[in-house]
Length: 404
Image (tube, rainbow, N blue to C red; front, side, top):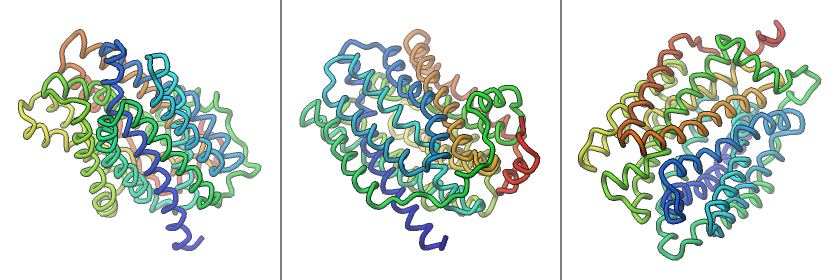
């Protein structure tokens, strides 16, 4: 495929994930406030956030395997359509039960993240994958930047408006993606033997030290730390700095701007200069520092400097880990392996907010951040054992047979 064709496909995919993330972030910052109005406490807010991760955990390996066999495009379109249904349910929700249902549907749609990453792996050379994933996540960061402000503004119109607007955007997104997004050109839907999903999960735990598995564990531990912070962020800002649903969007926008700059402008030069694995480690260090310092500021001005460490860290850590997972995956199993990575991330997204909400409610506002910092230190320690792979690893693993 020509460079122009690759850029065209990546551009369409970036547009699709931008709109999807725009809708996602229109409703996510409002979720704790809506839930509290319906009688939820901090622990229940954590449950609501985790329900999304549970559905993503169940669906991600299945989406990945289906995409390996039948193609990335239909799976991506299905996930985007489920997002539209989820936002509609959010807009119509009058009870915690409907909020839970909306999160389940949204999580099932969110299980396509690994498929989106596999699409990039199909169309971009191995040495450029982290940069391409950086561009892709830059598009999501633009959604993070604009979505919360749009959601906060829509909430002033009516409680239903954020969900209904987000659902409308997603319907348009599905229509344009079905028109413009081609199937990725890949030879992986061939006769190459594949592990079953059960065996892939079993191998992850039985052989955690294999190259692909080590990177997945770094991703999973780092994601748990990140989602623990996210699980209590709105509640912390509300208690400590009197932030409301009308102003919470500005904090997410601030984070989105930094993330967009990092992923669109700085990630590629950093990878060119240091390589994917060193950048991954720098990201883990930045996240550890940010989480450790998070409860210490007593003004919004000083908090702004601490918060900035989180998008800086995630912009380096997560694209680099995903690129390394794709490079180490066996031939014919890129989608499934990235789905496995997303499934482990789903466990982290499910468990992190639950224990963070419980600690926030019963042990103090700062405790979840310190525990998340300890997890980030563990992720950084695991990353010491990583060895970079530029795509050769997958071919070697295929030649030698299954690694587990």
